[in-house]
Amino acid sequence: MTRVLDVSGLEGGYDKVQIMNGLDLYVDEGEFVTVIGP
Image 1 (tube, rainbow, N blue to C red):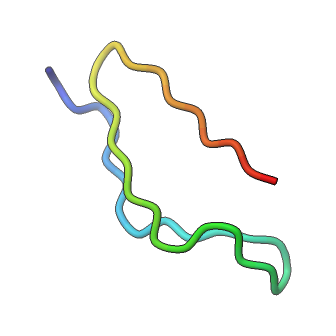
Image 2 (cartoon, helix red, strand yellow):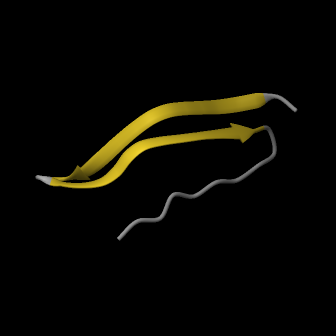
């Protein structure tokens, strides 16, 4: 399979509230991925 997306160390949040800390993920060709948060 061909890797079409490779994410390493993703962080995110709202103001001072951190909701993701160091997320690693990859997506291969033909896959569908969703990140759902609070």
